[in-house]
Length: 126
Image (cartoon, rainbow, N blue to C red; front, side, top):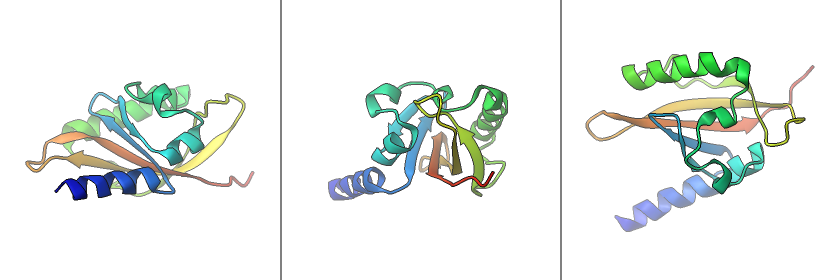
């Protein structure tokens, strides 16, 4: 079983897409190397911090309304389909657009533990 746990860790850490896991309170608990590269923040800068760190201010209300509804209902509005969105980079001058997909993470009895977002940068055609 320990091998499986290590394998999951290797997959998350070495995936080419950014992998962000937040608990039910919206605090970042997992942040892989690709997330460090994409967003510019190191693990120590984000772990335990609120997701507002990477959500533009104008998008926060919609994000939290959707997040809280998903956590409570156990269902995603977009049912996992990727969405194009602007996110905040550590460098405030950098305008970053990403394709992001979300999944709720549930335990074996179906209780929602948190949410995972998988993101990759997209070239935006102006």
